[in-house]
Image (spheres, rainbow, N blue to C red):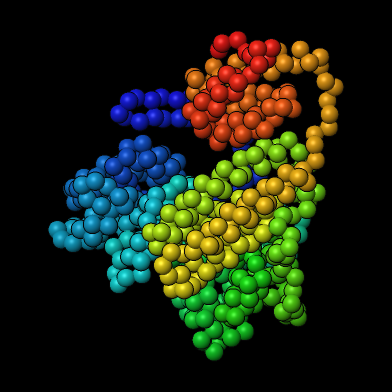
Length: 521
């Protein structure tokens, strides 16, 4: 890890990784036989050069403009017109949407180049603009952009056929001949779904949102054997898209598979009530999805309405069995203990933020905190807390009109705090001890530990990331009487609270008896 920092300017952290190339990775065929001239527009020169390098690697000619106005000047003065423009959305002098609209207005020689918008945020706003009459751009991409995403978007925008990726040979292609439409607003998720399903033999078409998906189905309902529908999308959600498809009598029997990160029984019930046939969780597990698609498309009996889904924990079981939790952690008791030591402080910070959002009546922000709390609690094994946070999140997202005033209420927040305290106490009680190691002589152990504390204090004062490793080493050899102090100290350091940890360690060292006191660091 390296750092550059300048007062008043900010800090830059970075590191380098050497990664091996995947010899079997699917790639798109080269596109050099389709001559194109492109213009990349981005006020960030580094980001612009990155896109330029991608375009050049595809065999196309490319020029760069650093602003919306510069793009207009280049497009109108270029001796040969550009075929397409990759336009950043947010730029200081003129945003990309404004520049794209002006490109289509006189004085423009010949046909205006097609525009592909590129943005790091604000996808919902671009999706809304794309659904308006005569949008000023042909497509949009969300940063970071992969070469495959870029090539596909450009070829679609200029009206060229998008080549299918070449996939490694596979022994069995279980979905041979199945025609699937994947409706998903995230470009990377679309690409993953297409590659996984194509490798199984499916013929996959993509839709970039709910509106696009409905349009493709209604235009040619007999073209698809199954629709794989994302549930949460910015234009219309998957449930509304399904209802619109089912409203057409030609599509009453078209199988629709819901694809969502929400996998509770109630979420599944909502999907089925909207007209979907089955429900599968994200991220995509091809071993789970393929059997479902085969059942939906090969005329087999539909799944029983009472099909087992991930069980919701019983209220009287506030935590998962410790054996099941440790199995997820590879039976690494020390690793799990480290997580558990940090779990309560992090959750308390989330609950504090939740209370602030509740007081401000910011339901959307409260839902985001509840989602994070649900995930962390589930990972740690605090199942009742995860369930409660998930139910609050579901209410906020599906029925915000039922969340008036201070929501969640102060009583509900107190209950979440109590669940957190009870869960941590229970998990600590059930957590087995590490196997006892051969103990060194007491004097030697104390000397090693205090020496380690001295090194740790020096590392904290230098804001050295090596403090994280030193803290773990000091915790491992801590005398039993100081184990709780060391666990709290380690939790602070692992969450990068170096200033607080430095102060806590100074207090600890000052409190040690003379025979344990470390030398001044």
